[in-house]
Length: 330
Ligand code: FE
Ligand code: MN
Image 1: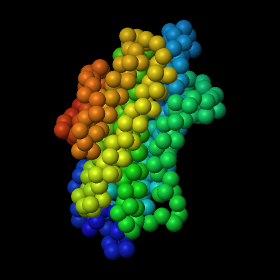
Image 2: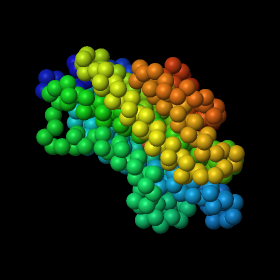
Image 3: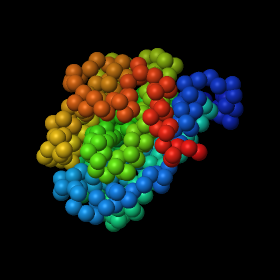
Image 4: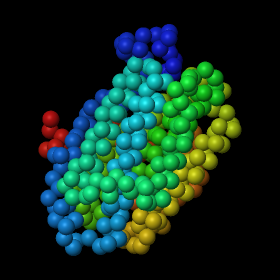
């Protein structure tokens, strides 16, 4: 049964027998990663935030990342529910989408928790995209890729319609969750490595672990659609997708420069830009495209955190380093 748009021919409520085993595996991997933000202590973060442990530049970097992620997580969840869910009809894929939406709710909850414990004005934190153009541009960029799917009239009939859906998948899975989150991950995990805002950093680690599954699912979904609809991924579309990824790298590099204008704890904006390029090359590879940058990973410790390469089997490596945490003992 085809993965898309098939609820006329097959009953979308019959999940067994499973046809797409990979979708089921992502679901199980997601369940193994259960966590909630409230189990991560924030006392040290609160005293650092209210004391003088952090430089003005570090404070700005933290605020920007909390500001970006606080709305980006809801944006992602809304895209899944309001745009994607209708068209991806294979039941086991929908089961994973439901799991992912739940994880996005956990991520949204993380920023509620951070906002509350650190004492932010909600308007201040959640209005960040209105005041910071580098954030607004990232949000607008992915939303623009998905506008057609929001249209009530949109249905998937032609190859061009499938490409609209693929554009959404590239936009949200590969670019939003796969590129736009990564400068922020590196910044917050870099701070944590230096003992700054360790609670928030740990929450970002859990989010990053979830996001690497989301990204993996998105890439496999794109592959499956390509396989089932030969001819849809034309050379022209391939070129378009590449341009989107390269444009996203520009936006994320600009974000990195502005969020981290100077040198923070030995990490400078140039390194974050290198990291974004390194990540983008991995993403292009996942889309069967050639590297664009050839940049070395400036933060090898990031790959130890969560490996992003498909070649590395994350199903084997995922939980080990977290299993000792009491918060995962359900
Ligand atoms: Fe998320
Ligand atoms: Mn996600």
